[in-house]
Length: 253
Image 1 (cartoon, rainbow, N blue to C red):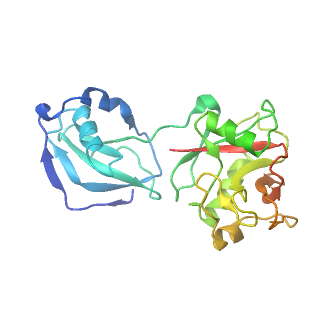
Image 2: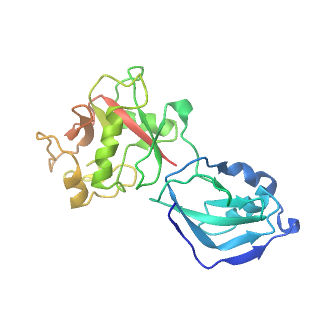
Image 3: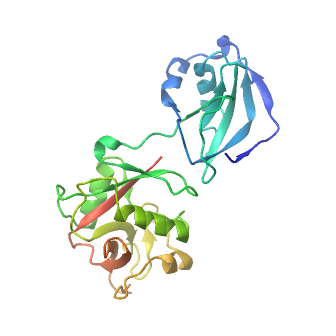
């Protein structure tokens, strides 16, 4: 596991310091069995950590903290910040990692995606049981279960190909047979200028060029268009935003 270690300032917390909401703080963190997200030790660690509650409360009170490694034998918890990239994490004798990041909402049909060099996220492809919807309908469907239309502005070109390969063989048997899936990219804000739907940020020239374009795709300057995956998830093209089709949702974790 790739970890950058900084000089640690040791903070001693007695039970008297753990007050207020601390009794419920532990429930905000989940135990990590394995993860591809990298972790960086923060400069404030906790000694005399007599329980997970002490660690959890300390993390919530520390800027940039998203988790901690608790070593019960040494009564120490090391506060960490998570970042994109890194080697696989597995529990060791030096402690167990707990994180604020949540798991995929599998009850809504989401599946974990591991691209290794980017932060973890979850995907859901609409199925034959879902209605074909226009672009706004796809937005609404993703928002309804806490997700957004698929966007990948932080995904490198190499990882985008891996992502598309994952979608081609999803871990589900009820994927829609219709070969058109809305993406979180459009020119609704300004015709001719593609933007990420989630943030409203324009795509860079490099991001536009890295998309696996269908040869017939066009970006008109006078009318807005919305992007979708086609040709068995191998290509991206543009269409009228009131067309009806399937969609791909994502949830970042």
